[in-house]
Length: 177
Image 1: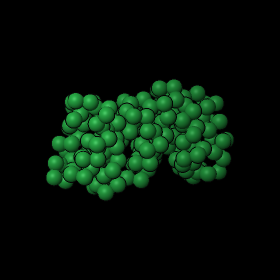
Image 2: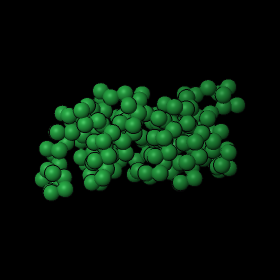
Image 3: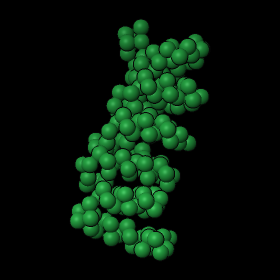
Image 4: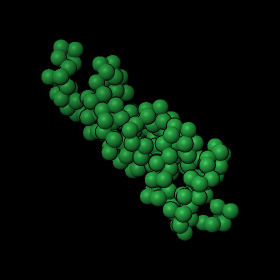
């Protein structure tokens, strides 16, 4: 059906895959959608089962499909709520994906303590505004780790001072010193 007319038959194929995924195996259905390069189909299929699955591969493939179809809010949701993905693998994928919004990467790095990696990546890719967003809105208590990472990459002193002033008192000064 996908071979005959992918656009017309995609919805019915997703419905069939969702209904019979246990008999047909999720792995083979993922491979089927990937073989036709239909990330939209993969996104909708996995979207129907991801909340009930404990399989890390299902969660990873769902994150991939959501990125490739521009569903950034869904990537954020899964990164924030799921405990069933390999954090290192997702972090590396999100870095390679170079999304227009770095919030999914920030969420993964904050949840799984990859803050130093996050700071190095954002600074080296000229994404400093996301470092500010991270310490101002996501997790101000991580400022000492962020400052440590910025010092490691020889960041300008005035940028570091500005971050400290903006966060003001929402972090442990003992850790910072």
